[in-house]
Image 1 (cartoon, rainbow, N blue to C red):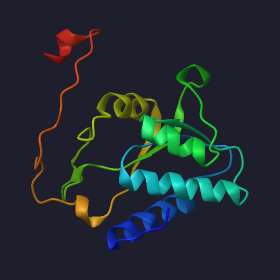
Image 2 (tube, helix red, strand yellow):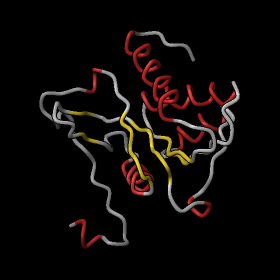
Image 3 (cartoon, rainbow, N blue to C red):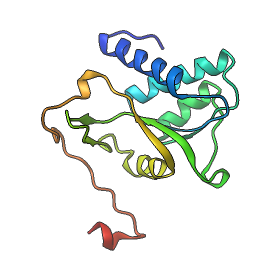
Image 4 (cartoon, rainbow, N blue to C red):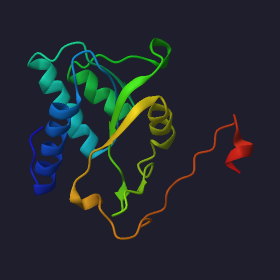
Length: 152
């Protein structure tokens, strides 16, 4: 996929920069959801095709899983590791103080599980995600049977 809009170009540049600066051979990465995260996954796939070796991923959505598999990025399940070194994901919104909203795209639970398994969390975003005030859209609340009492 080639970038079309100025935002696509910005997201692609952020993805390439994140791979170049933070990803090392052999890393176990969390692969986030959404448009900017998918540009990172594409950049990771390109780097692996160019010789970056041993990187494996854990995805936060089926869309990211499908993209990573199409690019030849090996994926692992939660039964195959103890901790992730890094997750790379984008916000739905982020304010000037670094507070952000995640989960507006309906991957909230997967994103949270993968984020909690990671030692570091890298946020990749373009300027369209920067907001003066958070909460421009409703954020879903996902409740699962286990632990529902603490959610209430």
